Image (cartoon, rainbow, N blue to C red):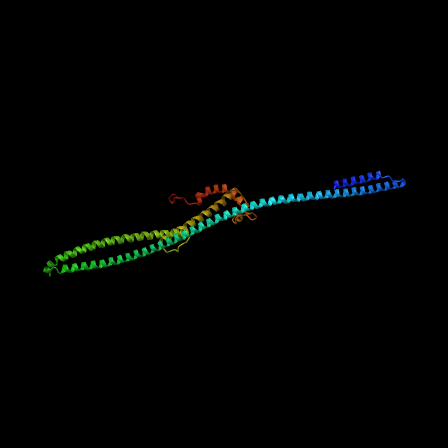
Length: 327
């Protein structure tokens, strides 16, 4: 725009120069010259006004371009920040996906372990059922052994009776006794053999019975331990063991109550010996009102060591000795 204005100005100066060359007669020449200068000045003023207006518009456009460039720079920075956020989000997404994959693998491993545990439980259940069947079979065999023992006892009694009958008939049947001596000897041998077998069977059954009794005693002790652990108190009179346990429990409770009451009485006596005018009736109701839990905890903590010392001093009066023979 400045170059165009310079061209216009040069053209005007050229026109004025040509006008200066033209020779006009008299006052007409002066009037033409004056009018030409006036036109030139008006044109120059208009051009300068237009130039200033264009320069102002150019400044405004420059400011708008600078503002637009600032906006573009801000948008570029936002775009870079958005890209960086997108990269970080993608990295976080990959971490989350990897964590989800690990969690899925752990879940699959846990499910596989649970399946193995279920199979192992089923196997143990089958073994338990097999053991139950074996125990039932052993019991049936033991019952049958008892029946065989009874039958053998009956046969033994019959053999003894037969031997007695044969001894009574010896005088009358000596001839027959000589003939049957061999058979009688065989019968006696058989009797001794049966007796030895019966004694061995009786010994085995007695050992089995002792084992059953020992197992029963162990089961009774186990039941007692379980009842103690579960705080199940058996009714009095159910067994001598239950009666003794119940009596011991009651005696221990009585001793504990006596120790508690003795300790409280001695503590009140100690307080009364050190201080006068104590409201023992109010103290018997517990902590004084108006304290919070934290304040009561602080009070308990502050009297912990003196209370322990007093309790140590009163142990001999409140607590029975470890060995009753020394009391």
